Amino acid sequence: MTSPDSLTAHPLFYDSLKLLLRPRARDTHKGDYGHVLVVGGDNGMGGAALMAGATAARSGAGLTSVATRPEHVCALIAQRPELMVRGVGTDANLGDLLERATVLVLGPGLGQSAWSLQCLRQALKAAAARDLPTVLDADALNWLSKDPALFPPGLRGKCLITPHAGEAARLLGVSRDDVSRSREEAVTRLQQKFGGAAVLKGAGTLICYPQGERVQVATCGHGNPGMASGGMGDVLSGLLGGLLAQRFSLADSARLGVCIHSHAADIAAERDGQRGLLAADLLPHIRRLLNP
Image (cartoon, rainbow, N blue to C red; front, top):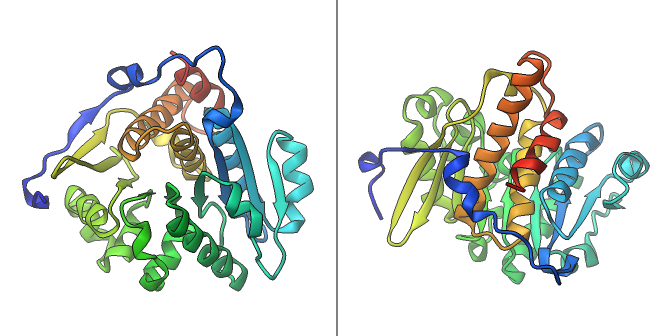
């Protein structure tokens, strides 16, 4: 494996990636485009699970389910009736939800409660047993930094992780300043730790992914300061899950997802300004960019 010190990030732009987005066959059906299961939305954080699920659906997933606290079910269905929303009680039994899913998105609004941990433990075990592509974000990563043994060896190489600098620092056991000083090294170490693809979010988001016997590091050429608002990471996680459900590889999902997410934010900011940009403002632009 290439040493992190020898890597130089190359820029990525939407226009260089959109050729990956081929038209769909006319005789296609929803079963061809996978079933995303979002697990998250602890008390008071149902919106995060909603945004991730809505984005997965808008990104082209054939089916999208959300496992969340029972208190959030009615609100999520009212906002996005296309989602299949299941309330998960204090026993945190995900049961058949994990059997039907083809892609997991773990972490949006997951929280740090006993319920959160039980949900995450079940989902990670199922992902490893069923060889499911898995997006790990937010509190899923925070749990893994506290208890690395939660990560099953069978999931290595099958996950796409999306930490910001603070989460990356906790995963690597270093300071946030260490990550900021050497972001390329940090994202490469994360990829080497978990396999698969790693996204280090921030200004000039970095993506590290395997290419043959080497790893590549790329930096997203899109994005703006208006993206510094709550929910942006949840939208990205849902977008990545939706792409994985459509059988894009981990590397292509990471590259496409990050560039489309940031480019959509640029379009939204150009229209209405950076201040007050909300995560949900990206959704119509994401859909258009996915259909060049």
